[in-house]
Image (cartoon, rainbow, N blue to C red; front, side, top):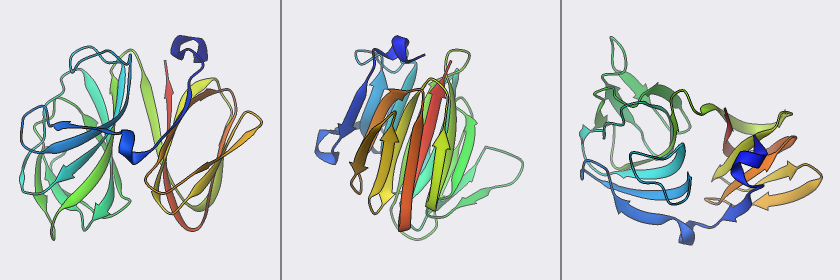
Length: 194
């Protein structure tokens, strides 16, 4: 799979995230990375973004996409429309759902920020994990994402060691990838594969 993504390895600072309105206009998001880079809402294979949720309301609909969402700041929210009962998400909680689901959110106590991993169903699959006070390794040719949600973490890409500062995101292609989130640190890690 790395050849498909042109051997990318990029450490992205928060200042490089691209601010834009939500697809439905209901809030603000920061686009972290997308493939292909020149794609739009209807043509990307995968997209990583950070949404600022300042009020209750519906999520944007992304038919044909799969979504994984992790609360990375604030006190979280209650989501409806994912299953038979509402889902409460607190900081560093993860939930996955279909992009076409009619999801509504209700803030639990003030504004919340979440990281979204979206993949086109049938083209790319995402495995998303929270690494907290731990070490994790993956060995398969894939595109990897590591977002330092709290504190800094270290990554090993093949044989190269890379420090990922808080709120920064590493996107890379590798056949071997490791993440070390030391005590007090939390990383959101995803493997994107065909």
